[in-house]
Length: 228
Image 1 (cartoon, rainbow, N blue to C red):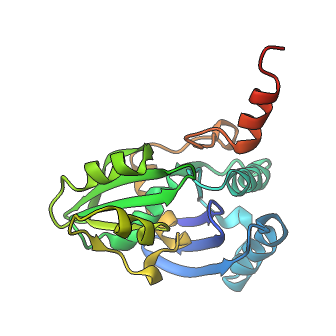
Image 2: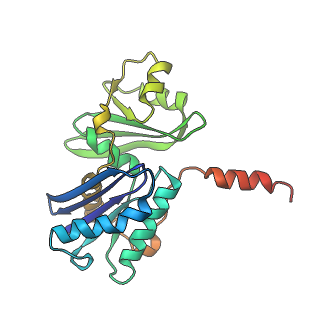
């Protein structure tokens, strides 16, 4: 089974390709959110490097958020375009779980990704016998999420605001190393494979983003139009 995985939810864009349990390739780079200019070209490169085309794929996994609103939209739009005439099934994947898989050797892992305004996109996962179980995943105030995470023994805390968290808590967290704070496309592929086997694939037409919050543009527009 050949699976393409796409994650454009962060500044680091990642594209992965697997066949069954073998990683055929992965492309990761810091793109400063110019994903729309690079995504298709790099998908084509990854496929052609393995003598494959879109028609050879059995499944596409895509990160649906939370994360960058613009990045998520680019990823979803790209997948919808790729699947428009091929009818390849799609599996939507949590951006937080993609990152959590980097720490799957730990029994518990907590992800805290900056959502601005003293909030985080937070998720807590349990890994037992190699299987991931989502415990919580939502938008939290930082202090609220730290209270949740501190209830678990030997939990690994990882995310893009670790430095801020260290200044705000006295809890003895184990902190994930910065080198592991990349949403890897191959991780996404394996999560998509698992969910496909659970019957969770859907049509590209049913894809929806998981923003967990409104964009700043939406908030500003609503404020501007209050009372009209």
